Amino acid sequence: MDSERAAANEQIEALRKQIKQTEAKLQAAAKQMSQAPSQNPAEMQKVKEENANIQAEMERLLKLLQSSQEEVNNKDKALHQLRE
Image (cartoon, rainbow, N blue to C red; front, top):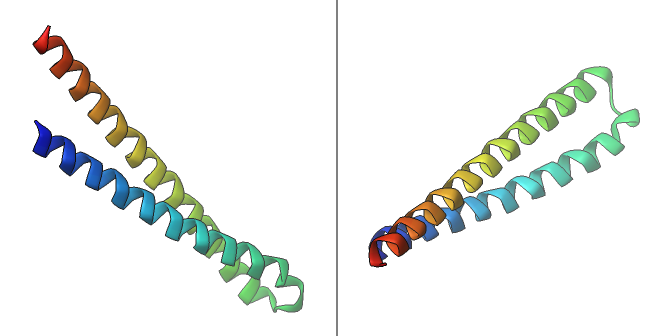
């Protein structure tokens, strides 16, 4: 069980790292969008699409993180109940 928990914690940490990287991408896209008025419409559309993709990736990663944390919590509960 400890090895499973360690693996789950590693997965959670990896997801957190991906979330931080995605947040950085999102901030860069937001900065680029703030400069969008000086860009042509095609570039502006590309930035908007990239921003939407980044936001979707962030939501996916957050859902994965939440489900991983729930899984660890459920396993901890089950282990605690078995010990009682």
